[in-house]
Amino acid sequence: MATPDFILALRDKIGHDLLWLPGVSIVVVDDDGRVLLGRRADTGHWAVVSGIPDPGEQPAAAAMRECLEETGVEAEVLGVASVSAGAPTSFPNGDRCAFMDITFAARPVGGTARAYVADDESTEVGWFAPEALPEPLLASTPGRMRAALDWLADPARGARFQ
Image (tube, rainbow, N blue to C red):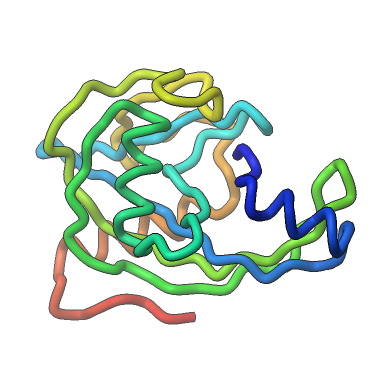
């Protein structure tokens, strides 16, 4: 995931100290029940599309923007599937952060899945049946997928809060 300029500016001031950051994930499910995944350029792991909203950007708009940028697929957000706080993470450069993730359930409404759309964050993009996921898979992906698939099966149950 490319680091947004506003975070780079914060890092100039605070160094590698722990940052608490907003994050969004979008689980896009097509009419055949397949899930859109991208292979991350930074780790090589397959994952649902995720990113960091720009300052002032609405979370659902950020998720749809990230999806289009990273995969070429235009998605419509249908609802909030889960909200959770991640454990602090350290990056190879020493930066530390923890994310508050909002996972959205969505459906595709246009575009074609392909890597290297507007950035170089994904090396591959594809549609996968939930029972036939590629490896290696980012550790957060199964939980986010399950929350979205559960929400799509019964939206009345609402979002998962951890």
